[in-house]
Length: 215
View 1 (cartoon, rainbow, N blue to C red):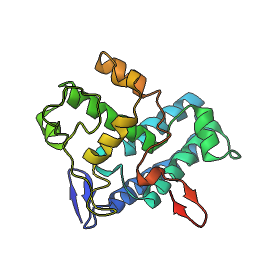
View 2 (view 1 turned 135 degrees about the horizontal axis):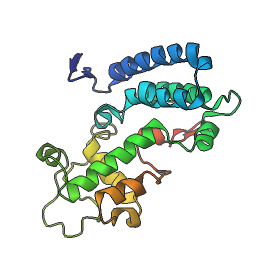
View 3 (view 1 turned 120 degrees about the horizontal axis):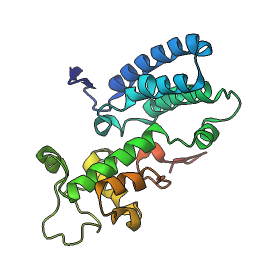
View 4 (view 1 turned 180 degrees about the vertical axis):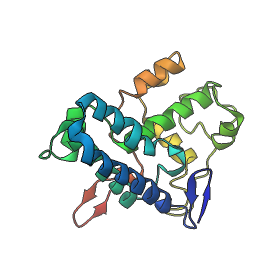
C-alpha cells in the first residue's frame, strides 16, 4: 500500500487501510473530547464534533465511499458515539439517533456529494479532470436520461461494480426529477441535502435477509 495525497491505496483497492486509518484518528479525537466534554457548553461541544471528528470523513470521499460493509460499519460506530455524546442519549439505536438529530449517515452524505459532482459535470461547473472520470456519452440530448456516462457493464459479479462512474449512473437514475431540474448549483445542493436515498443499489446498502444473504 502507498499513501498518495493523503489517501492510502492498498493492493486490493478496497480502501480498508485508509478507512482504518481515518477511523483510528477519529476515535482518538473522540476519546479526548469525551474526557473534557463535561467542561464545555453543548454548542461548543457540537462545534468540535463537527469540525474536529466528523470532518475526518470529508476528505476525498469519492475515492473510498464504496468500500466494504465492514469498513462502513466502523464509520457508523464512530458516528453513533458522536451522536450519543452530542445528544447525551445512550439508549436509542443508531437509526433512531440519526432521526432525532436530523442528520444523515456518512455514506448518505457521500452519495449526496457524488450527486453534486454529477450535476456539476452535466452543467459545465467542473474541472476538466472530472470530465475524464464522468465522460458523457455522445448524442445524449436529455441529460436526465438513463446511462448518461460512458461506463462499461461489469463483466463479473464484482469487477467494476464499485467504480464511481458506474454507481453515479445508477444513483442519478433514481434521483427525483424535481432535484435533477434544479436551476442552479446552489439550489441543487439545497435540494440534494434533503434527499434520502432509500433504494441505493450499492453493496453497502443491501439488506441482509436470514438464510439468503444480502439482497
